Image (cartoon, rainbow, N blue to C red; front, side, top):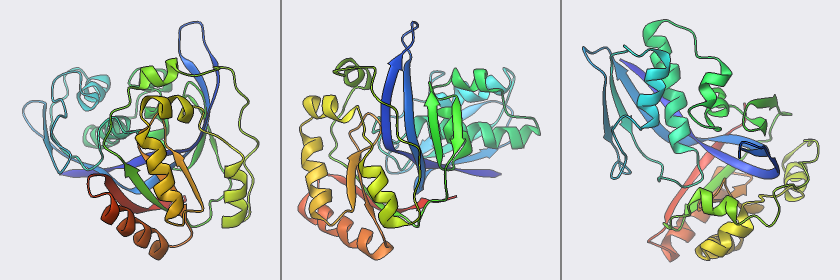
Length: 276
């Protein structure tokens, strides 16, 4: 039995810098990963199968379009294994859950087969977030997701992730952009928590304004995080999950409790950010 983690992906900043002729958007994003996430268990079996368990299992497709099964087919069309996805992240929430699951499947199945991972162009066929999720380490992600650069060491970080349980279609968010040619991030540089927050506050998530138009609940979520004492709050990816950043585990845990108490219908989780 092989067990592989699929940590939640957070876009702490996400700048849309252009659009290619084929429709793919060009991005410049600071990507980190939480300790919180999904998990996969993989075992040898006479045929390929996928089962889904966990608190967020409902609604996860298990047919051939599932990214985990597509990842398996990418490694080998004849691959056989019993895969179980323990689903903890909400669906279509701006946390890269499907991409993280696909990346975890690639890592685990490659170990099972004793083979190399696919090349970058092949991995990109699964989605723009899958290459960075394969690394599961802090990265600057550019291009359509294929240009990955290491970052300066991150300070210790904790986050509260909040999803108001509203659906925000990614396509509609991108279509709502006022401009698809926006300035890139400034060069990443910081020496500690305060310096990091100062630098990050000068960056953006260009998808946040159109997402707010589609789902005003995102504004309520950001306000709740800011009121909880977050050093910075922002939407992750195309939403609707938002994050607040904190300097200690105790601060994050206290903020998560207070938000969950006032908004019992929201998905609220505190987590440590992986800094390396």
